[in-house]
Image (cartoon, rainbow, N blue to C red; front, side, top):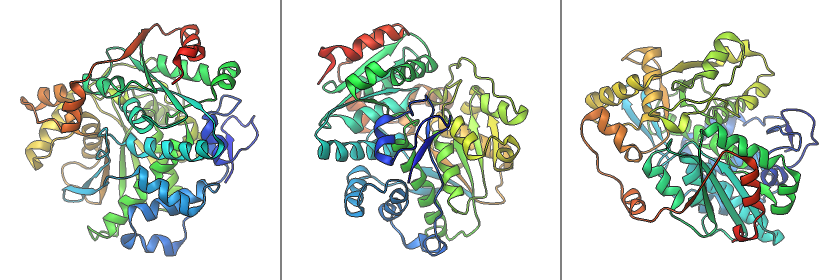
Length: 438
């Protein structure tokens, strides 16, 4: 498998080079030159396959440089937690992606990426630096996934005052090889700083710089796996053969890109609903055909507060920039904060299940499309544990819910972060400082 740039101005590279570079030299995102197809016998056997087996089969198609026996070992080390498909209501299912160490879906991709990078670094005996922007959950997932991984330093940039206290504690209390930078600005400011660093040849060469955002294929490819795994469970544990609609709470649109890849590989998925909050540039793009990025606005579903989603470029590349074709597969819904709170209440009253605000955006988008009764199977990606957003849940339900032990432990630790302006010169100086090396 080779990867080219969406901009088409950089030479094709293999999985290892795409993993280490993060972005192509021309500033574009790496994409597979072709989407491999899953054979019919494999798809028919899904109900009898395990998560790890499905992961090995799919990732091997994208990461051919890793031998199968090594790939199996990396997957087993990365995914030590379940990813269950749970029935919420008749024909409405939650794909619970939050059972990893930081209780968010990004553990799946971040932990595999950490294992893959460690695999190559151990063989090559070299050191790299990862720089990552976060609107909430990416930072904590990357920080925990790479904590104490040999030969790796991590810089996490997050917007000051725009993520939950729990999210901040998860990424700022580790120390060691994890460096937290609190940026005076928005997620888009953080993402812009990361892109500037990745395009700066001096910094890239001095620090062997890469990224662990979903712009890195090492984060994106593993996410394909859990959508195929969801279908395996829908057919096996739940006995439903009808191709489902998949609803994806969307911010930077990496998760939606992954399910679009899964469908392009032949996975029988009927279509997608991209569920956004007030940051609705993609629903607007699908409606008008014109993409107009703008500064993000803060919402209760803060991990989706993205005004210029990077992975839209991958979706446009997949659909050959034909917005009409995208519209046939992707419906987009924007959900307000008030609707998010109402959905947390409605779902709790109907089912006794507490949703986090991001998953609530997804469920509300599904209800808007189908109403309270679902005539066909719908799978909503449940992206985070509700315990990570106690203030929002309390506002919706009028009461607190118990926090998981992983969160209460993190709240007791001391915050370690450096406050900076959204000025690339300051970030560059930090990246090149000898004192920032582990």
